[in-house]
Image (cartoon, rainbow, N blue to C red; front, side):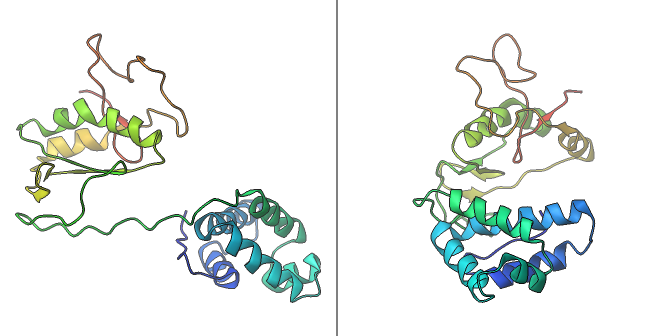
Length: 215
């Protein structure tokens, strides 16, 4: 998605951002604009989204048709967005903004590891294989906990940035990735990961979940 919404963004700010990102008039562009407004509601949470949306509709006499004409949407699209907003659970908290990390070689990161952020040191010269050997298990864990990020080249015991040296051949191996685990799918206990050997060595994954082909 081309649009990123701040947690304090208003409905009209979201509409403006959506039109700047998707300017076409075809079915695909309309669908993308609808999806982007739905994403906005997910970011700010049900309570604010309902208040913002209803205030906009009421400012045009409660008419979806009038409101839709003002912002270049169809009344049907607005009703679809409203239906999604009302379907959000009241307890849904706004999506937290990801922590911004600043990586300087030799320096220590401020943020600790948690279930959504993991650090991994690579001590072997065979970087591509090292990534392939452990990344899949992290991706599966992230899928089962609402997402996450894995940072390579950070020593997890003290959060020290030590870096990763990638040869051009290694970069090609890492880039040759294909989707492995479908989003939302939770792998049953004991099921080997794609590309795993009989001994259970996982294949390769990174955020978003991917598995690299072995050379």
